[in-house]
Each structure stands twice: as C-alpha cells, then as structure tokens.
Image (cartoon, rainbow, N blue to C red; front, top):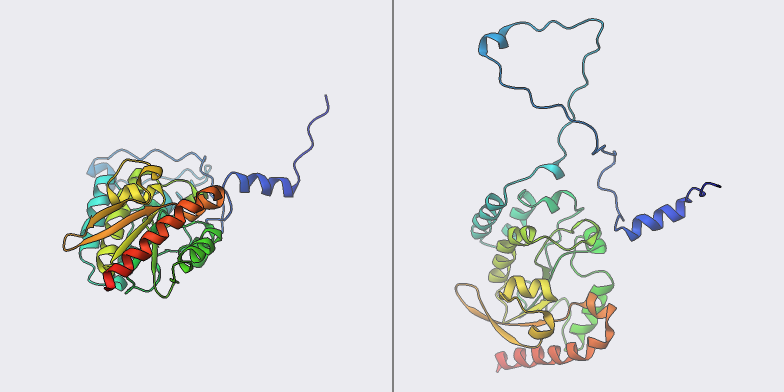
Length: 278
C-alpha cells in the first residue's frame, strides 16, 4: 500500500484557515502537552532550613516555565463582580476604555491582538451594537471594518448616516479565537462595560445587530426573526432609550434575501430619529 503524500504548505495553510487559525498569538511556540511537575507539599519549618544536597551526577532540573497569561483563570463570579464595580466607576468613555485595557477578568483579552472599543461619534443620537470583533477588527482595533463593516456603512448611508453621525461598538471588545461564538460567561463578564458605554453615549436610538447582542442587551430569549423590527425600552437606570433589533451585516452577507427586512428596520430607525427632533 502506497503511503499518502505529505500535504503541501499551501494545503496546510488552507486547513488552518478552515479551522479558524488565522493569526499567531505569540512569537514562540508553547508545548501545551508538556508535563508539569506536581506542586510540592508543605514541609515543616525545620526541614525547610536543612541544606539541600545536589547530586553532582544528576543535572539540575530546568526551571518551571511561566504560566502564559492566556491560561490564568479568574472565577466567573469574581470576574463578573469585578467588571460591574470597574464599569460603575468610569465617569467618561475615555476612562471606560482605560479600565478595559487594564481589566484581566476576561481571558479573551490575552488571545486578542487589540482592544476593539468603538468607532464613530460619541455624541451621536444613534448607537449600533454588534456581538464581537472579527479578524480585521482585531488587526485595526476598530469595530466593523471588514466585509460586514463595509455593508454596515452602506446600510446606514441609506438613511443619511455615516460614522461621523453614528456610534458603533460591540458587546465583546476582544476577538474570540478563530471567530468562535463567545461563551455565556465571556458575555456576562463584558456586559457591565457595554451597559456603561450605552449609558455614557446616551443615544436616542439603540440598534442591536444580530441575535447575540439583542439577547444580551434587551433581555429576551426569542430569536432575531421574532425580535427584529420591534421596539423595546432599554433602561439605563436614569433614562429609557428606544431600542430596536435588526440583522447583523455578516448574516446579510450569507443570506442576502433578508436585506429587504433590514431596509424596513432602517426606515423605522430613520423615522424614530426624525420624530425625536420635532
């Protein structure tokens, strides 16, 4: 039996891209399968003072490698409580961004390239919120700059808006590895920060893009097919903001037949903005 030919470099790269591996997380490879020595038991104080004799015939063991930051875990309850406390103390958007840059309660921070905070006008009357950054956003540090971002630009341009008259962000500010779906825990940890961001921007209309952001922010378990086009009241604690859900641009790229429904949602948004100025 003839052995199968080894894959070419091009075939290997195609395999990794298909699996979602499209960027390196570090300059040096890490052997995740290497055995780690057990933590030594606590020894009596008297024994600790005795000198340790090194066998000259046996080489000294190599030093233990440092634990990668991406593998440092925080208890979910602790991380969520820490996020709530930190977000509550941010008086401005600039302060909120600084808090996110130093916050270590979400493991996604340690696998992402950049923090993707927001884009657009912080004094805009309409705010768009997606789920999480993708590869292009992770590289540039701005939300919605890839193919879905270009489509979002065309969508809001159809109702007379652009990035100078809208504010754009995501529930999750760091890219999940391989563009995977964020876990419920990751969403709950990041939720206080996006809630505070909405409160600080204080828009007249809040637009959730796609099912994950809609469920996270509008406290509904229904799917996007049922929630899109409907108006909700989003309570910041100091004010009630009109909120509406529509399809995420990435979904429209896969299912262009739903663009007609999205156009109806956009017209409703334009109408609501017009009504708040009269």
